Length: 247
Image (cartoon, rainbow, N blue to C red; front, side):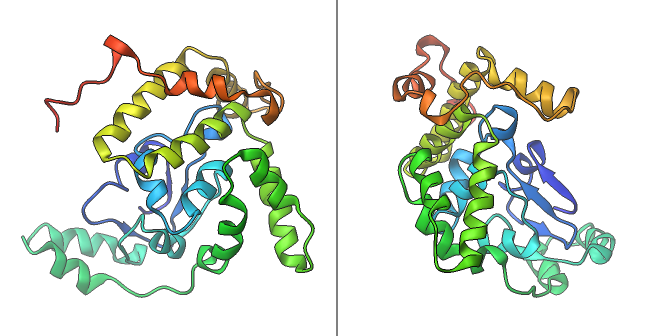
């Protein structure tokens, strides 16, 4: 993971056996900002990050670097980018992968995520996005905590209300599922999002026209009902993903 690692880049790296990051890493799960949900296995790996870190990354789409990725458990070791060519060359001539990687890896400084873990857990432990936002916006004696909370709340409110509510349910549900069931759930969600409005509108506004002014189907979090969220998670019947020949 050497540079921008988002979307599909996450999917082909985070689930690997030896996950190496460099100082150039810019990792994010920005899907709720384009009206989608944290896919590529986010249902599985995000709930397994420390505390509420996975939900924080899912709802905010916030970027993190190498030290944060190591702390969050989505990377295994750090190797400076300048050493990557030599590492690749060494790996090409040995079967002892672990020994070679260990000889190249280095230590990193403190993670910013680790420093804010208590704040993240305090606000993101709630079971509704509205309650999470309210907790983030609550006035506090600690000015730095309050400023962090205010900016984090703004990030959440800038994204698709539907996607945010789906993501919360997704992360909470994924914590109890095995990987195969997480993939089935993500397929179910993808089918529903492809038949709806926000993914197309978010892609238009953020990726194509780049006006950064998406017009979401639901204007407020309060406009997304629990019944609607239930529909996205409902069984597809005969259309369910069959992974029996894969796993």
